[in-house]
Figure 1 (cartoon, one colour):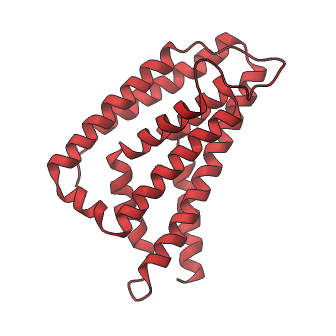
Figure 2 (figure 1 turned 180 degrees about the horizontal axis):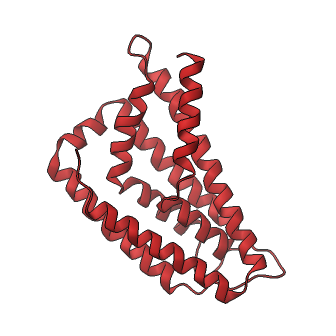
Length: 209
């Protein structure tokens, strides 16, 4: 793999990662409600799920799923339903401003396990992620070189960038929880809920080319 190819992939991955998506919004919300420790579990869940999707694409399972209209639409419907449910939960949540104390303590609303499973489910139930990995990664793969190593390198680069961006969102959420009032935090959560609902609508109307 050429260094120029890897550099282009790095720049493209950064541009894609900074675009707000469901996992980024959850990282922000987790940072607000529970701090970076719980948010880190969510980031781990999203990263593990993305790694599974990349591995599936590498062995050809992503193309197999995309070839089945029924399976693709079933996954899309499940993804829409789950995103709508998360939007509802975010809209109803009541974050509290934290001026002192340890923000990284677990709260009754979000546990590390719940954050991990929620973010992993969002990543796995998004058919656009499968389509993205199936269409994006192969553009940087040299068919004349070992494919497994190339997918491993590209996957590691993308997942590292994605995890760092999610961590930045979580830290921004934690910072907001220290600086803003409960009313201000509630507005942020409701803003995230609106964006999440819009993403669900976009997924509901999404059609493959």
